[in-house]
Image 1 (cartoon, rainbow, N blue to C red):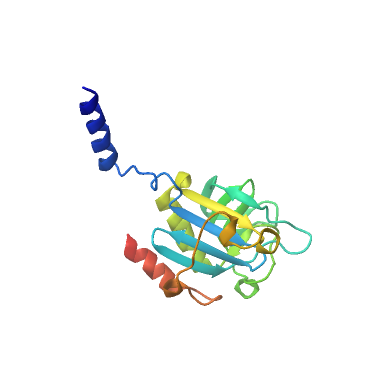
Image 2: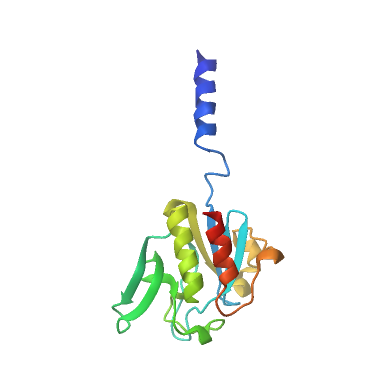
Length: 181
């Protein structure tokens, strides 16, 4: 009887894809404030995008988070109804979102949010919605303070085959994501 129950449990686990790896976050976004980059690992794909985090006088909170909510288009009530397309909120009012100020990407410029090129924000938003909040991890670090990005907890090793230039729209990343669907 025990053997039958065990076999049934193994079968159900295989059927639903439950494994030790399946319980870990399948989408990990590592934001490094010191290099103003966001490295995203989704399945076998790795993307590295320029971001803008908090400028002087503001903070981007450090830590490890799960998304709290998403909004295809949000307007900041705190900052003059500024548009925040493809927002992924991770701590209160702090979000990863698209920006029209693409020339500022790669250097601190925000009130604390993590700004992305609109194309990359749309791709990340779609990834979060597809992976689900429970399978997404957002890690914000400052590699100057904590050693290196790779030792900060996500274990990401960027693949040279899918790294793209630091600024501008990263259409190949979007195309690679669309091909996965």
